[in-house]
Length: 166
Image (cartoon, rainbow, N blue to C red; front, side, top):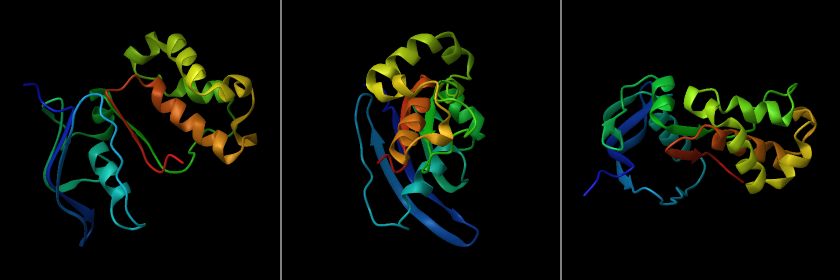
């Protein structure tokens, strides 16, 4: 039996002396869709940031396809295949929709497939094809969110994590 796509074991993390995640464990298989639901302030964003390497775990492990990524720098976590689309739009406001999408394909493997992935994103999110030459700052909130998700899809990752995808 192969390793889960993502495995989190006894993960603890927080900010300074504030523990937010305490002994969190779960696994996700390839092809699964998982939602983490809960009230504001209960650690959902901290969990994603810890998996991404943006918050350091104080204890526990994060494994991607059997490879431990817990102590890797965020750029290494991305190169291993974790794509984290953060809460909020975080777009480049003066760039076009197309330019923002292409920013997601900055790793060499993704850059080689950028044109095909762009077409794939446009097929999933057809409004972005219509808006591809429009400046990101002029988009509605929902359209900005679509660009953020589309940019994440451009990365050709193994695992796409969306924080507040609505």
